[in-house]
Image (cartoon, rainbow, N blue to C red; front, side):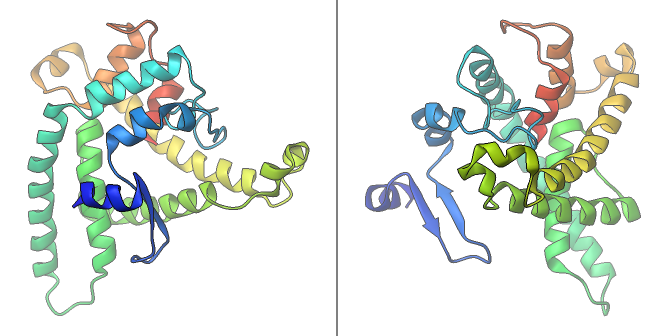
Length: 237
């Protein structure tokens, strides 16, 4: 079906069938290979730790390093297989939660988002949320993500007239910095907890994505240069 749509509409198409207007991309190959050079020149300096993410970094050796890490670590067969197990576990947990709330009002949208969030966090740093912490942080995370995505697509007069950037007339930069501070606080907390884990525990546990990235922060491995902390956090974004 995707191949038929691609032939009729191209690798990108605009979809109005959901609550928010959405740009649909045919697949990862289209994003990371065919359109790589075009995407590499888009900048979101504030929201991506100074343009440290794969989506907003300028084309060059560092950007190619990030793309290689993304393909070999984040999108590896092992990572994708692990998602199925995590998704099955979290969907089961959501069903049990909904069943336990029989007769009480439930926000299904929040529960679906929390389930997806738990799967992603478990894949990234091996820790899922539980109980009240799960609900509280998950709802805050959802609101922050919505605000962050809204700001990324918000029209900004500074894009048309770069000399106005320093004045931040619409307050977009301030709002972006505020949203990023919330994410940064979470990332710093998780990274600090992971660093406290001793080598013996790490050897016994299966490595999650964060542990692999922290190892690349300490030593470059097969890559030309080690990952910086900003690059690690930008990959999570």
